[in-house]
Image 1: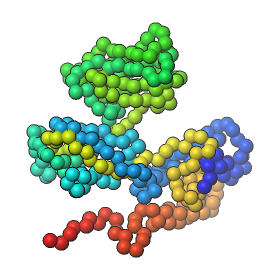
Image 2: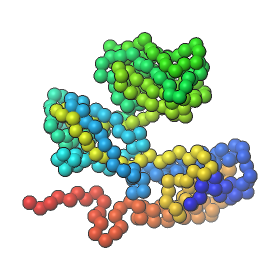
Image 3: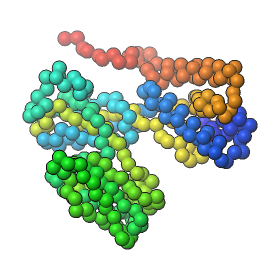
Image 4: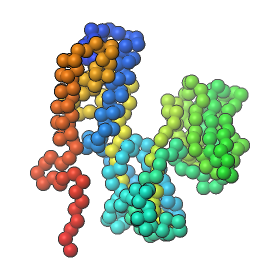
Length: 312
């Protein structure tokens, strides 16, 4: 399997410019990353399944939760107490579900919705100020954090900063809801933890400037704490370092090279014959990859999207 650097070289060699270290190389890197993201987001492949089952800890009287930061799409949610998979209800199907979503309760969760994207892990249980703390040392005075949220129905913002190096910043603005956390400053060196009312809203490494988390919501309020199990297709990784290995299976990395070359036709000056050849090869590789990694291929494997219903 070729590394990110070797894929760059494959594209640049075709352009007779394998030694380029300037703008052209940057454009090639961007084209390879876009191809990598698009290919692996266009379909759900078995090799993109997260390698283990994750646990969602359900708290009594709490309906909404955020899921794993690497999640792209759920495969299943399972209740080990009832030995049943939870049913997903689309938000626009709430009326047809006849769920008592307003004040209904349930002992064992059995249905859920995916209702949006959140930029914080959770919301404060009561209105609170926001506190930022660092791990491993202090941060520069040139770095600050902007908090955006809502107080009494009004959108409010607050910038937490210090005139000197800092390890803790505490705001004065009270938030009912925190919508966004923005790190301001070009160079960060520490992990920061954002809390409100002793609840962790987010943990950001020095190189992480934000997060998007899928929101999972139970249709009725749980009456007791329980654990749900779930597994998912993960997001494709960003290719950054020269020795990064793409998420594609070995033997299919020509997909990235071909798509990068097609995307950069204005720089490659490829002829229509060459473009047709890349399109044809890409189509064949895509067909093989979809047949191999999208559905069961072994004897006895069940067809995709078929739900087994036992006879009574």
